[in-house]
Image (tube, rainbow, N blue to C red; front, side):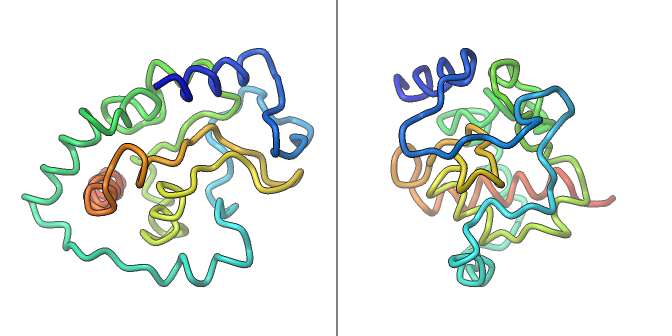
Length: 162
């Protein structure tokens, strides 16, 4: 939990974190979530990440478990909000609004494998052209990979066109 506080504190006061790129102009200004078409996965790892497949199908049982993780021990709701709209309490201190999983366009451009890569590696920025979002690596630190797949299937269900 202390890592979250340190990173969020750094984001609030604009302190660049060690090992992270200088942010591009406009970074941190109000304007909603970062462009969904910009991959969070480095180019050298993108094809491999896109190919990752969930070992689970999005059954009602799996989605229920994913929601419980999202609202519970995964603490996803802190940033992404209880309904996954990117409006959680912690979102106010982040330089970019957290991902809005209710946006149906997101599921069309980002694959489950890319989402798993972010859950494993975070999204703290790759270069001066791709700023970090404040997303911490969760899988392997706070959640198992199985729980990560369940929560991301739940997140993707929020943006399904009805």
